[in-house]
Image (tube, rainbow, N blue to C red):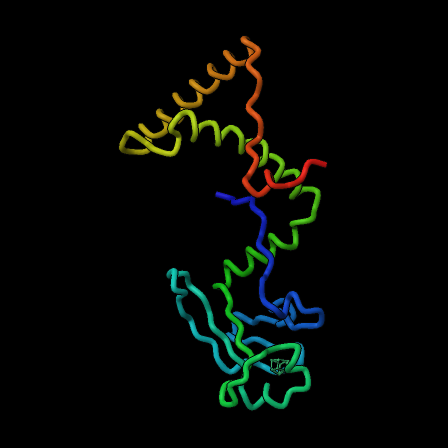
Length: 186
Ligand code: SF4
């Protein structure tokens, strides 16, 4: 299954701060379990861990003795703990990291925009299925019966749409969020 979705931008201060060293400025060497910073220093820690939500992650850190005297430190870390001043970087497992990098690289391409347009087109159909036809819940056990339910739901939706078309029923308006509703009329 291939997921086509926008990739969230990093929210770290290093990404927002002009001149900050974000994760993209570091070279990741998964094979040798090491990270190299823009200053040429290499990490001293590479530990596999899990987030609070249970997601696999890799925690890396640079040695305090290297980062403390570094002239570029202000662009890199704000840690004030004198005994623990090394830059830390948290990474996703290699396969996930590479998939995200690949998706980011393709995000602005025409091919990607066309793929995403397909998704945007089917969102309304999925929404109608969920809101009007109970698509989110399966009343049967097993893939075969679940598939049959989905096919019957799709058939019912087609009849519903045909009826709306034959009776000139106007389309529902796109829902306006509470925030958008506060916007002054222009
Ligand atoms: S603070 Fe540490 S990790 Fe950051 S650039 Fe300097 S040496 Fe590299």
